[in-house]
Each structure stands twice: as structure tokens, then as C-alpha cells.
Image 1 (cartoon, rainbow, N blue to C red):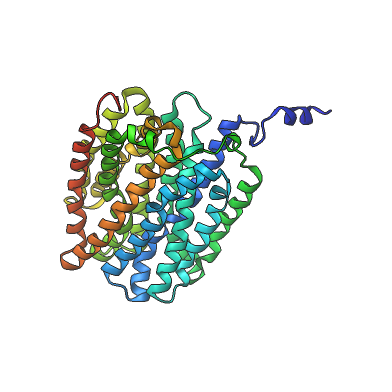
Image 2: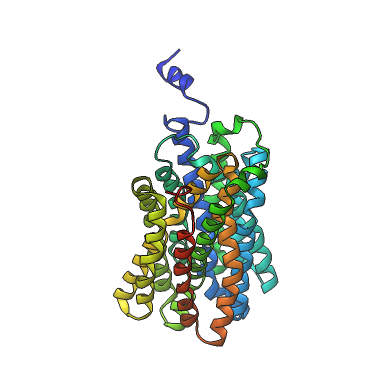
Length: 399
């Protein structure tokens, strides 16, 4: 037996480049998360073009965003329940390809109705990925799970952040009607996952839905959910409408608006990564409350300053606001470890999705009545409500 053969013989199934099974699973899932959310973020930069191409109102643009968050987020608890029971890796493996094909396919939509269909189907692929991905990402690690979950979550946030610049560049080079070529990387990574992803947790016994375990943590889970809901109202609406606000109201070129959105979302990705590390060191409760308290002044300053200073204020606000994304998921999993997929979906998807379904269309409607800038500023009351919700979580549940 050669040395190479001997080395491969002792590596657990599913290892990548000689990494441990836990590390290779995290590596693959993090890159998959990046690809899935790269395409999930397409609508934010497509909206100005769809408004012009299809003659949409701000309300209809908001409805597109609402359908996306319903399909990609509100349905996540269903996929979380199914992934906990079925344990098939197809929830994860197929997601990059299907998200890429359907969401990039918005460029081919000839009517508002077809745009809704593409958004719904692409969102379903996004939804199927997240609960299982979050359940498996840090499952093989026994220490600093907040840090490792932050790697997984921040990879997705980075994908969302790169999406505006990626699609803006692709539109410049290919034209909006030819964007289907940009689905190729997502399809290719599905092939990589089909070959390489074999997480050890798949061999575990199928889990039954345990309502008693959820009821035993009902109070902290409820207030944690409310905190995520309030944070998501700001996060989702800014991601959907910021490029449109900069392009339509501030009259910036679409490419400039895309880069500002990327700057804002990238700052949030970095914030999410650091938030996980800070929670391991200082405690989840302190990090969550600090995030809500200190993000508002900077995000408000964005609307009342101009030029580079305003973009810096926006980025700092997003950096602080998104501290909490991985922290919330880890806290929920620690509260109900036997239902990791379900509670991950509740915090990552259902809270995000219900906030988006309500506030994206509402923000669009308020924008039609007043202005998009005014509607976005109204959202800044929600971090203060998130601060209140976090303060109601029992200290013994979330130290």
C-alpha cells in the first residue's frame, strides 16, 4: 500500500484536503452557503431593472420581495422538520443549482406573474438549504460553537454582500437578458457537494419532532424569536430596497448603488463573524443587546449625511446590527439541542421571512405614499424593540 493510499484509508468519509470530518463539512457547507445566498441576493439589484422592464410600481417590487422571503424563509421550519426526520443530504446538495437557475432566471421574466414564479421556486431552494446546513455546520465541534457557526453564517452573508457587485458586473458584461450564464458556478458546486459532502451526522438516527422540548424552552425562545424578527425587519428591507433608494431617489448610477449595497452587506458579514467570537467571550445576551442599542445611531446618520461619510455610517450600522445572526442560532440550538434543524429554521428563516412578508410590501406601499427614504428611516424603531425583547429573556436561559 502506498503512502497516499494509506493516508486516504484513515481519513473519515467526507474529508476534504485532509481536513477533519467536522472541518471539511464546515468548509463545504460554508461555500455552499455563499453560493446559495449569492443568488438569493439577486433580487435587490434586479429590482431597478425589473421596475423599468416590466413597469412595476414600488408596491409590486415590494410584493416580489415578500414572495421571496416567504418562499426562502417562512417555509424554513417545514424544511427543518423534514431534514431532522429524513436526513437526506439532497436538501443541501441541490440548493446551489436550483437557487442559481430560478433566481438568475428572473432576467427572462416577461411579466410580473412569471417573475413571481421564478422568485418562489428559487426561494424554495434557498429555504431547503438553510435548516440542514445550520444544523450540520458546527455539529462536529465541541468548543467555541459560536465561532464556527459564525463562519457558516458569515459565508452566507458574504455571498449576499457580493451579490450586488457580482450581478452589476455581470449585467455590464453580458446584459440583463443573458444572465443565465451566471448560474453555472452554482450548478457546478452542486456537483462538488454531490461528490464530497458526507457529514457524519447523516448516520445518526432520525429525530422525532419533540414538542415537549420546545415547550420547555417556550419563554426564552419566544423572546429570542421576537428579537430576531425585529432585527430582520431592518435587515431584509434594507437589503431589498437600498439599491433602489440610491438609484431612484438619490440618482446614483446602478453600478455605484450596487457597490454601496455590497459595502453595507460585507460590513454585516464581518460583524456576524466577530459577533460569534464575542458571544463566546462576553456572553450572548450582552452581544445581542449591544447590537440593538448601538446600530441605530449609525444607520440613522446615513440618511442625514452625504457622500462617503454617509456610506461609512451605513456600513458601521450594518456591522453592528448583524453581530447577532450566528449568536441567535447558536443560542436557539443550545436551548433545544434535540431539535437543532427546527430551531435553526425558526431563527434564521421563519423570523426573517415573516418580517420580510410584512414589512417589505408595507415599506413599498409607504414609499409610494411618501418616499422610499422616509419609509426606510421608519424601520429604525425596530432595533429598540429588539432591545426590549432581549431584556425579557431570562438570564438563566441566555447568560
